[in-house]
Image (cartoon, rainbow, N blue to C red; front, side, top):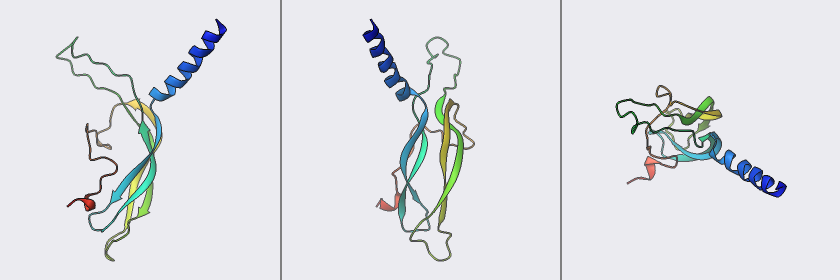
Length: 127
């Protein structure tokens, strides 16, 4: 019986961190319209799962805001983009998550769209 308890405990320990909202290392591509290059940088952002509900079947006329994995706190880092003309500011500042939680998406500060261009998109490589 003790062996079974240990197996269940290890299984729960492995499952719970995988489903939580937490900081994740990502690589993003940065660019400026006025510069001729894109650069990749490493950053941290929020990733994971939050509890969601689908009340549409029970209450079809009620709108329910779902919680997402989002940042609690962010800092900003700055890098220099190569290939900028002399009269162009070559520095680019981007957000880096410091802490995460499950909450509503703040559309004042965040792009809350379902699908964006992706972190590796660079318009300079497009024809």
